[in-house]
Length: 377
Ligand code: HEC
Ligand code: HEC
Ligand code: HEC
Image (cartoon, rainbow, N blue to C red; front, side, top):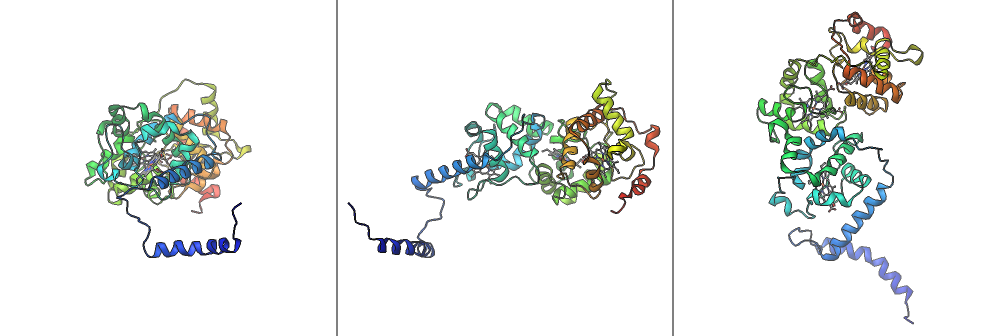
């Protein structure tokens, strides 16, 4: 049997950390990326990464259904947020990126080797020591799930379908717009040239009050209103265009709201929106949201897509929406809402004919707002 000299072993173990630090200090470890990793290092790093992702993914709560309605939004984020490293259908990775260590892989070839929870974990938190960044806003998860839904489609996505999803009618992206036209083109990729949104995950911004649009852009850029997607856009476009962009979209004609078939859900939403429910401390939404001369900080909800309204109400209720200065009111409003209330309200606002000429809309909401005791802004 081998004889173990415990004293020498203990000594060697005690010295080891100092030996490693000494080796690092004299520059023994090659941090250059040119020669690649040793095979064993490469294997170990991947093994460690896969194991960590697998373990941390166990704590991820997976939604019953991926938010496929928001895939266009995720695709719109992809060129600026991901394709610069990973490439995209029809847009191979750049030679510079191929010299990174580790190399950002072509995601179409990789996504099927991960579960939804694992993809969520990687995209939300990034991968340390590799250059793979975390999601730009850590304060909400729904956008990350939208990206997972998009990644699921990636392996089967052709170049043309990708271009349509990511760029829409514009056809390409200018990373740092240098003219106002380029800035508008960037917005068009998701909001459409008419400002009414290319998917139901994107709000209508056409005809919205200019100051609300401007304050929203500032809030996104400062992460006071958390959105990885809009935060990156607002910063990339740059503060110097915000004012003109807000004026541009405010001047476009808003949708008129369609008269929907009166389903039970819509009727329930309408009752809540027009009358509120005093015993449950739910105020009437239209008091703040539907008059023409309302406080410019109160956005119009006319024709706002149901899924967008539903998601925003959930975010308000969960304290994750943030705001442009007046959101505290909306967090109070949303707190008592049940999932059913939210579904009903979303159905109503998406279909309601809310032309701002109705009697209910003539209330001076500034006064209502103050008399509510909510005026301590
Ligand atoms: C700055 C470059 C960079 C950007 C930007 C980037 N990534 Fe990565 N990503 C990497 C690198 C490098 C790896 C490899 C990590 C490794 O091998 O451990 C990686 C790994 C991944 C993986 C795991 C793939 C695998 O099988 O190893 C996924 C999934 C992924 N990225 C998705 C995304 C998404 C989605 C975005 C955009 C929201 C994004 N990445 C943005 C560099 C980047
Ligand atoms: C990649 C898709 C995408 C692009 C590009 C984009 N947006 Fe957005 N925009 C969104 C999404 C998604 C939201 C909703 C985010 C949230 O949950 O708060 C949004 C929200 C907004 C809002 C808030 C509207 C409201 O009702 O509260 C404004 C204002 C806005 N965008 C303006 C712009 C402008 C101006 C541009 C161009 C510089 C632009 N967006 C580019 C997807 C995009
Ligand atoms: C006291 C006034 C007030 C009342 C009552 C009110 N809201 Fe709001 N709401 C606001 C304000 C202010 C904002 C904008 C928050 C911000 O700064 O981003 C807002 C924002 C919203 C948004 C986000 C719109 C967008 O474009 O992103 C939705 C959706 C919404 N409210 C729905 C409702 C519903 C549904 C009700 C009724 C249950 C309601 N609100 C009642 C003041 C009010």
